[in-house]
View 1: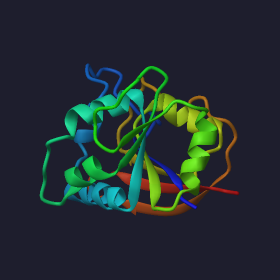
View 2: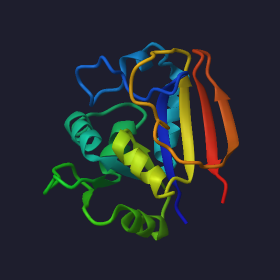
View 3: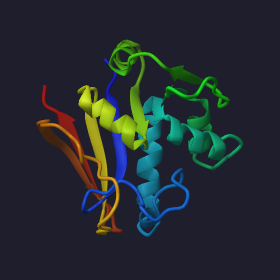
Length: 188
C-alpha cells in the first residue's frame, strides 16, 4: 500500500510559513538562508521516490504557475511536471497542468482509494489546510520535517490544531547548514 508523506519546511518553533511573505506560493523566505547542495539532493531524491503529488488549491496554483516549462540538470523539473498530481479543491473546476486530476469528493475516501492504487508513495507539498485535513482523518503515514535553525515567532504552525497522534522516529539527517530532517511514522 502506498504511503501519504507530508514533507515540510518548518522553523524550530514549528512555523510552516513566512507570515511576512507577499507571495504565499513561494517557499518561505527563512528557508532560503539554509539552502544547500545537501538539501537540494534530499529534495530531488524524495521526489523521485514518489510517483504522485497531493496538493491543495493554493499550492497547486503556485506550482502550476512556476514549474511548466522549467528544466534542470538533475531532472527535478521534468519529474514534477510529468508525475501524477491530485488536487484537492472545492472551487477549481478545471486544471491546466498536465497529469493533474481534481479531487472534489470526500477527502478521506478519495485519499484511501489513492493509497490502494499500485505505485510509489504520495508526497504532499505545501498546503496548510490540506495538511490539517489529512491529519484530522488520520491519512498521514509519514512526516518528514525539515527543521530549520531559526525561530520566527509568528505564522501558521504545522501542528497547531492537531489531535493526539503517536509517532515513532524512523530517521534523522543533519545537514551542514543546521537543517535537520526528522522522519516520523505513524504508530498503527
